[in-house]
Amino acid sequence: FFGFVLSATMPQTHDMIYASAPGNLFLFGEHAVVHGHPAIIAATSMRTYVDAHARPDDRIFVESRDFGEFNHSISELLEMNFETAADYKCPLDMLRDLVKTVLQLVNPSVGCELMIKSDIPRHSGGMSSSTAVMCAVLEALRTIYCMDVPKEEFFEYLYPFQVKIHGGKASGAEILSSSVGGFNEVRLDRSGGNVKLEKRSLAEGIALQLVVGNTGIEAATKQTVPYVTQGLNNAPEDYEEAFIQIDNLTVAGMAALQAGNFAEVGRLMNANHEILARDLGVSHPKLNRLVDAARKAGAYGAKLSGGGKGGVMIALVNGRTRANVVAAIRAAGGEAYEGEVGGG
Image (cartoon, rainbow, N blue to C red; front, side):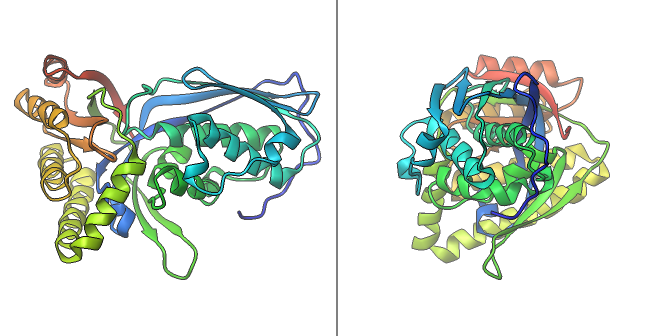
């Protein structure tokens, strides 16, 4: 972890702190980005919220509407061990690990209370719900404990947790959109020993209209990322060729986004999905069904988003086609959410 400065003034225990972070969606480049290729990722209008305050005692109380609660003393948390993802026995262990790490850095004399709720559906792999939780919790903790950590540096703090969550490899791309929002081109740089995320903001002022289709099939990125990595190890030339094709689609997608050519963006999204489904094998029959339904209903394009093998797909629409695409996704057996991407 990088250094930081502590303020001389701690918040009063009755001062309520409000933090939030958006989920995000991959327009292009998922899986390839883990292996050094570019991706385009955007923040969603669905968010995770944390209401927090310092406590007068040494207790750390965390309650999540979706996953339950824990209540530990500072010393109890500091004694817990979370070396690898295997040490995460339940979803709350990720939060225990994050809070413990912050406690080790700030050595506080008082505890805190965090109440977590989210607009992001619990069973929605592909919307980076866990990353939104981590970013919102870190935002709350940095305020409670007066940590001088800009949001632009959240990647350095949270990337080790993503590696654990995703089974040993991760791009960390989601951290950028969940911490600072917007449309972003990202690329992981592992040269020089330290992992860095190269980033560039894209398409300022453009709010894409997306419909998100949720299969309702819970899929863990910690399973799909190692699945693709194993395929790369077994057939490196074939998989690298697929990654290069995705790389080319991503670069072309950047140009189309910045030109406001949504028809071209949609065509490229379609091509990206076919590579993910056919060459990398990370789609699912229900994902394909929702993608096909959205295309037939008039979407510019549609693809899975995130790890795949379940979770969500996205369809690029406009005001004229939005309602038809929503109805088509629901008729095909999915849940449909409407919204814009690229906000803060």
